[in-house]
Length: 393
View 1: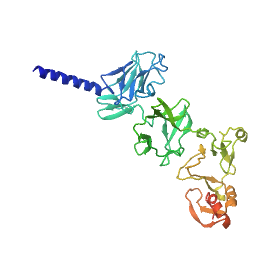
View 2: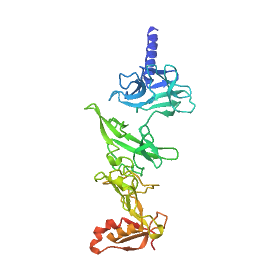
View 3: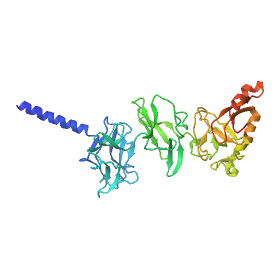
View 4: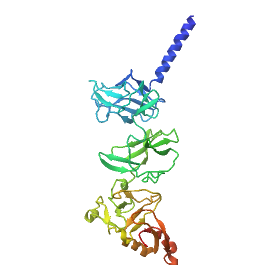
């Protein structure tokens, strides 16, 4: 009998320990996290609690940071704009399924924005470092994910970086394979990309191919979007890739209807058929005013399109802004030109006519194709293919 009693007590103790261990990553309605307390994700990679920046400051923040490696590297902050002034902060889960951060006066400093009613809500710190609010088996709120914390998806499915209301960088639209501004965005042994777009949602994400790699995406104070990789040998982060590679990635550096080439000096050049809108400023290396058409368009005079090289189909509206030349894998587009500008191209390469109805962008072959002299065929073929005309009978 004594042995049985001892066994029951021992089993009860083991069960209680297991419950505690299974709950270290979770906060329920009846629990709270006070300053000095933390919860840790399964596997121990991430920790949630209160911290100061700098370490000797009285200002306190609620956040998530790396625990196993890069100790103290912060991944997410709740009250970035409104720090606590002391250690009185408390994190709670409400009956309505909201996360709330309270100060010593019981004033809400920060809260999640879920408006859904919840049953048995709890907050869990996942092994990915994401803090999620759950009710029963449904996720109702996420603190951050690899795609949404520091970059924003906008119309035409591109990623942008903003400083206040100003766009400082954009990825270019998704073309089915990659973002058009990232020609180097190819499959690699570290991680893979995915772009999801359906009736319910639209998002860009990435998944690790090699789970042993520790990597994060960071928007630094300078506005640079960088992928960092943790190196055990040096016990530090190293830059794997940067979205803003050079000056040509500065949004609208050259203004409208101008291209940027990092290998040229000056960087900016008006597209064919365009001239600087403000010549004096342009000559002083202020290209932000962009370029205007050299000759106005007139649909009745046989205006056409000049091919710029590449592949795919994209649409733009208003001024054509933020263009750069890529050595490889650029995107093809056609720029509408005045007939006289196209004639200059024809003089160089002969005639290569495609008939396009005025006001449309759908080409169909015209009945004639005239080449230049036989000995110049090979040399002129590439240039000749760059001219598409319309409105000619």
